[in-house]
Length: 287
Image 1 (cartoon, rainbow, N blue to C red):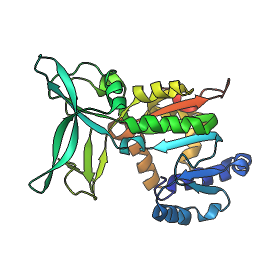
Image 2 (image 1 turned 30 degrees about the vertical axis):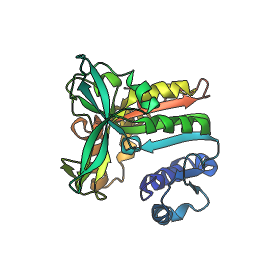
Image 3 (image 1 turned 120 degrees about the vertical axis):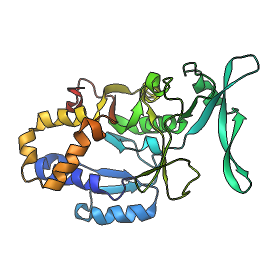
Image 4 (image 1 turned 90 degrees about the vertical axis):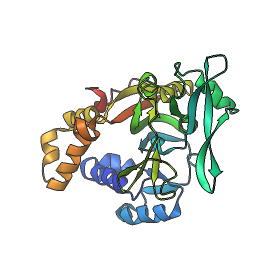
């Protein structure tokens, strides 16, 4: 979804101010399954009546020409939790972690993997030692398939936390990437503050790119958020962008750009379909 619609509002307001011809042709569709959030978005976007349409899912979206943008979407998708265990023969095999009840409390239970898609995808992983735990996000692969079917021509731009496969499954990342947070505090278990905590896992960018290629999409750029925004600034003229910007906005932008904040931890992947000899995207000129 689009949360409360602030990003959509900024995009539309900027287009109306700086690119009136583009704004006149623009139609902005929001994928939002929750009516309460759609109501909040409607309030934020009240000044753009006639420009916004909502759809409950990608499946409900008509084929389109344009750009599909997502920010921190895939890291919130449900994942399979898996753990490597030593077998009787001395080799290792993967088990999946399921949830069970233990004395009226939630606990993990390790079980053999009977999901064929999951077992097939596990063949792409490097060898991992016993007790190695990680995640497998098959939902993100289904998502990119669905988006590719709807995109007739244009781009898919994904902003999220993640690593390429060799780094995602590196030996030192033996506890995986799953994080549980509530009120900006890191929790020790997904069984804490159930219903009130955000549970996320990083994205395996290699798997996304491979599935995208299989669906007819081409990778047009991959970089971190710092270089992506800096590249855009270089095309638009950074000095003009800072004019009439308040101190709060400047601090927010510095958070997005600073390498030790969100500048390096968030990455951007651009995929394209049927764009021909379109010029390179400015966000990837330094990445």
